Image (cartoon, rainbow, N blue to C red; front, side, top):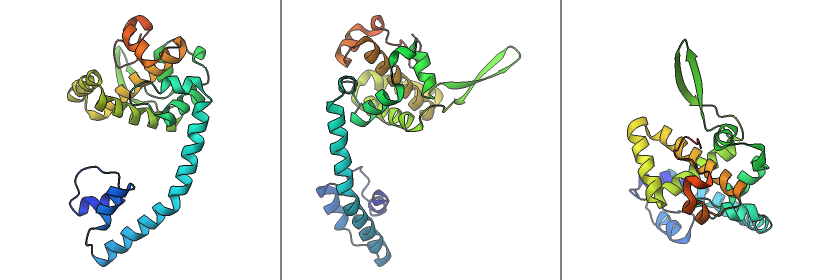
Length: 209
């Protein structure tokens, strides 16, 4: 909602408004009385939440330090501590799954199938599994897309053919498969990237082997 206030005042670029520079710019806007009150209410709420957020962040960092698997998954571009830890905790053990397609299905990132006679049509994703992990994978994959040229090319190619929503899910599916193989084979991202498909990395964003 702070970003909405900023956008209404012409701040079009994305800025971390909870950080000092962003907050200072937001507070400098001359707003109508009702908008000014709303801004102050939101900033007060942010001040109340910040200590708790910092406490949770420290707890997360401490937990990550105890988990070699989580730290290894974090070597993948775009994957932070929360996504990596959630992946480890939700999946439990990579040996439960025989291939990347199974892991993608488990987290609900594969399209449902609708059959009629000899025709098979792919529908919306199943959304089975842990919804928080699915959300984190989608968000992390978009960070990867922005930072990795190859991922960016794949994303825009899919977006042009199938639409941005489908492309986002496809990249999240690809990320889930990458993390699965990194964990199962004991690779960090650099090793997986060098070995490519020889390491079991999927050759396409749909998560097949």
